[in-house]
Length: 485
Image (cartoon, rainbow, N blue to C red; front, side, top):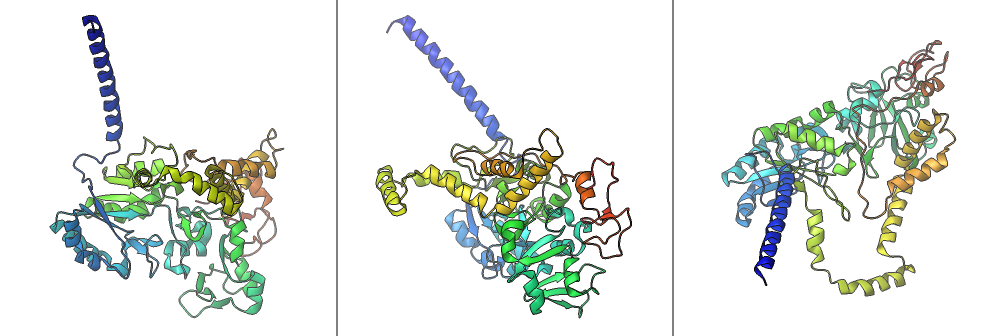
């Protein structure tokens, strides 16, 4: 090699090295945004402890020495907040202001943390921001109980993502073993006035009675509540509150609303501030209306604490680089590590076996896409139906779009809701309040001179109230009517 060639090669190597350094610096700068704030603890290795009535905080304290011997830096605790009685997992929260009482409550939790700190260990906790339980009986969830009793006028109405426009302007409660007419006719539903407040009882289920309706005949009383008791199969088509996947007993809450975020995170953020928790593992961020806004608010309110998210990354999907988190919980890493133990040579005989058993030669991507469509059209039909109705209402108010009927709207939503394998999800940025119904929609539901279906009082005059909220309806010329908070 000549000296000239050596010089060119050296220069090329230096240029490539500089480019690599710049790229590494850019990557490091990007990664820096995902790290905890300076001085914040960073867990090195965590050991999961499933706290429940059979394994309390005291039981967890008893294994701290074992965790230390294993080399764990942190105990990774299942959800801490008060769940339904007997919960084996803690993801069915009913009270955000208390720690799990069946596990020992705050006092036992503090003892556990002190024990961890004695061994120079810390604690991180699982957090469930997306939903809370619809328990049996419903009064175990005081926020939900308030909404069932007082409807949109409840101070907790803004907590839940309820479509008050549907299901007769009432929260659907699909708990009946038979149709409502059969239940009323058989006497299975009864009014109980023996306690401090009147109640509707259906076996183990207990519901509040809307004030002013307790003296009505039973069938009329049932019809005047802010909830609609229904056969359990009705939920498949008419459920009108957002939930966790297709689980009716886990109702989504609107943590995109700053007031709801503050109320549901005050205790956890206090534990971080006190040094009782070093970090948080966020459950199911894909279910949130605005996951980016949520993790940004969490980073701000926690002072930049260590946070990881249970974000399921599909295919080539990357964790959004504008989420200020330390990373995912590791499903993506486990996928790749697990792949080391899978022999690629097995793909051909396994595919042949699948074709023989199923009678189909479709590849795995086609099976995945079909499974997604079945879920959208089956288990999540109620959610898709609600979106279709919203889309139909949107196009109906525009003369240029109103010829788009419900069938093509349904097809469009189905296609959007079940993307091809490897397609990353897309979120719209959430507004702090639900969309407002149009004035024409409200006027269609006003009934001058007649009793509102949800009214507990006398027939309304011509300036009737809107039956879904019990508030003054918009004048005929108004562009919008105010939606319930």
